[in-house]
Image 1 (tube, rainbow, N blue to C red):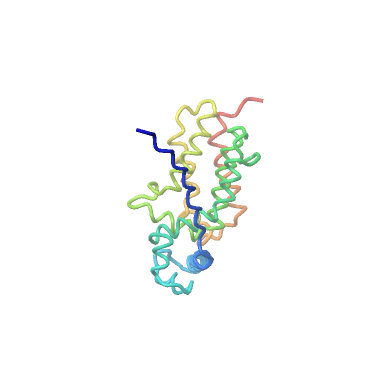
Image 2: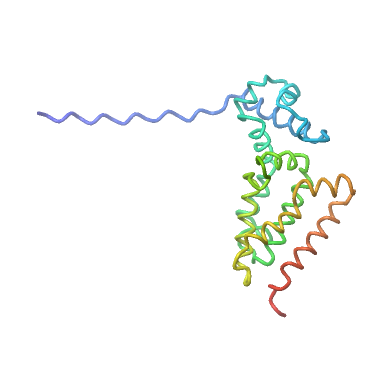
Amino acid sequence: MPERPEQPERPGRPERKPRADATRNREAVLAAADALFARCESPETVTMADIAAAAGVGKATLFRGFGDRTGLIHALYEMRLAPVRRAIEEGKPPLGPATPPLQRVPALLDAVLCFKIDNRHLALALEGTGGDSPYAAEHYERWHGMLQTALEQIPGFADGNFPAHALLAATRADLVEHLVGHERMTREQMRAHLAAFVARVLEPHAPLE
């Protein structure tokens, strides 16, 4: 029986690009959510209905685009964080991967602190989405893993798990909000206090001159 000739492969469908109105709606929603979180006294008071009304879209648009309130907050957080992540993953010292760990650990923590000061309304909202504990939130696990890896590259830090948790505790959004919003501590004061604290933790592992 003669073999059937092979059928030419059908080209795959081109990847569909988001419609222009969908892109505009997404940008409007993210801008509205950011403005609402910045103005509110408590992030829990901002609802999906509030964000939809401020963005001029229906609630269904929010749920289609982001899934739920946590998904929307996460998308906004990630958009703001993208430049910091690029600097950490592929940038130059002191944040980039080629930085010696004793210099990179303080730089990582300073970057976390500065980001949370600049976006404290958003960070505070996101840290409340980890279920029973903020430590279950995805963004926390990422920061902790990165810091633990850097610590364990320093001689004497065989296990950087607990030290990473302890150091990150100094950058929690609720603490940042308390110090900035209630005690009126300035950005530079907070950075100086954190740098001094991290230096004391790392001092026993610094090489002798």
